[in-house]
Image (cartoon, rainbow, N blue to C red; front, side, top):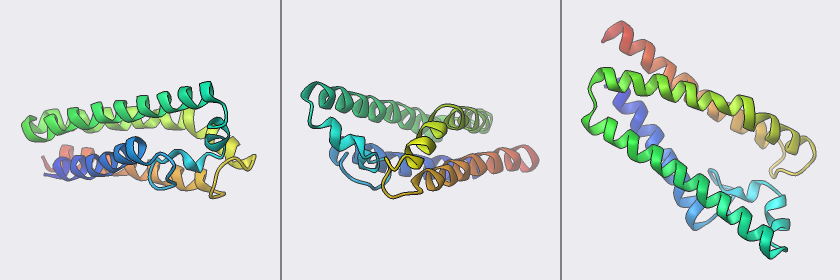
Length: 144
């Protein structure tokens, strides 16, 4: 049950992010790329605009793959499969700290992220996801 709730929460938030990326990338909500000031500068060069849009759609598509797989696990997976999924989510989400966080933190310090301080907000959100999946994994191991 703990796994079901964690997976459902993650799927709902990521589904909203996918919608924003596909339908309203200029948004500053969720994963809207308008938090990055260079997003608007890239639109001034057609080749760069197409490349950036391609990358945004790539990210959205990747998120959609994760959502689909998590839904399969949610509706057909055993408790062991859901525990393994929670552990996989912990490991995969942790890559944010190695690759993405240093970049957004630097962009934030350069004044290239709006609102200022968004890197700290995103860090807190990612850490909350980590904590949620860790809590359900521990609960699943201890309670069953």
